[in-house]
Image 1 (tube, rainbow, N blue to C red):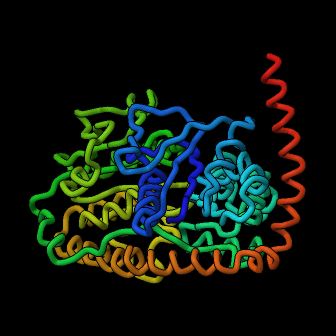
Image 2 (image 1 turned 120 degrees about the horizontal axis):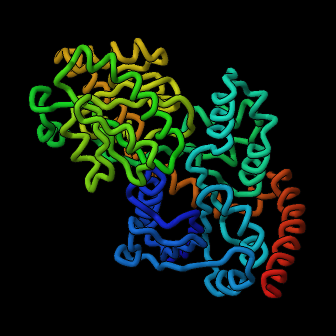
Length: 410
C-alpha cells in the first residue's frame, strides 16, 4: 500500500469548488488503495469535513517549525500532493530534504497569478495582457513551484495552453486534469424536473472568493432589465460566508433574494430554470457551471466564466460579455422551452465528453505510475526545476529556521 500525504491550504469544505476538487482527488487515491494523510496548518471552520469518517488520517501541522520534519520523516510518503503553490513554497523544501524519493505533485486548483492579474487590470480598467502576467511577482512564485514539482495538475485547457506557450513550461511537467464527474445517463435525465416544473434564476458561489462577490454586484445591475421583462421571476443568490456588502443587496420586493448557505447545492440548482454567472475575472474552471450541467440547468455566463471548460463544443446556454445582451439572453433562455431544452442537451454532451471520471482517472493514474517508475530520469530532464530546488532549498530553509528561532525567543 502506497502512502499519500496531502498538504492542504485549508481544511476541506464541500461549500467550495476547491473543496469538491480535493474530494475528487481523494477518491481517486482511495480507489487506488493509497493510505492517505491530510495535513494542514489551517484552522477548522464549522463547514470543515471530518475526514476521519472517510478513512483519512488528519494532521495539524505548523508553519516554520521543525516538527513537520519529524512528522514527514516518520511518515515517509510515496507521493506528496501540495494543495496550491503556497503550500509547496512552505513545505516543498522540507519534503525534498527528508523524503527525496517521494513523487511531488502540485494541484494548482487554478492559476492564482492569472486570477489576481485579471482582477488588478479590471480595477485599473486596463485590457488583460500576457505582458502583465509576465511582470507579475505572483506568476514568478507560482511558475517556480510548478518547476520544482514532478507534476502539476492544471484544471483548465486554457491554462495548459498559457503555461506552454507563454511561460514555455515543458509539457512533461503538466497534466490537464479537469473535474472528475459521473456521466449523465438516461436515468439521471429522467429524474430531472422539466422546463415547466422549474422556476427562477439562481447564482451559487462562496463569498470568500472575490470573483463571486463581483459577479453578484454585476447581477444587481443586470437584474433590473430582466425583472422588467419577467416581473414575477426571482433571482436566488446562494453561497457560504455571505458578506455584509452582499447581504445589503437583499431586496425581496424586487425579486433579488440573498438565500445564503445552501445545504444541498445540487437540489437548489435542479429546481432553478437558469443559472446566471456574470464572471468578470478569475481562472480555472467554474464548479457552479459544471453543477448546472449535471443538474440539466442551462446557464448564461461570460467568456471568462466558460473559459477552458467546453473545448469546441457549444455552450449549454449563452456566453455573453456585454451585460445588456447578457440580460436579453437570460430572458430568452428562461422564456422559450425549445431553446432551453437544446441548451440542456449541450450540457449533457460537455459533461460526458470532457469530464467523464472513468476515462480521466485511468489516464491520470497511469501517468503517476509511469513517472514514479522513472522518477530519477524525469527529474534529470527538468534542469530548471533542480536549479530552483537547490536555490530555494537554501534560501527558504534558512529563512524558515530564522523565523522558528525568533518565535522561540518571543
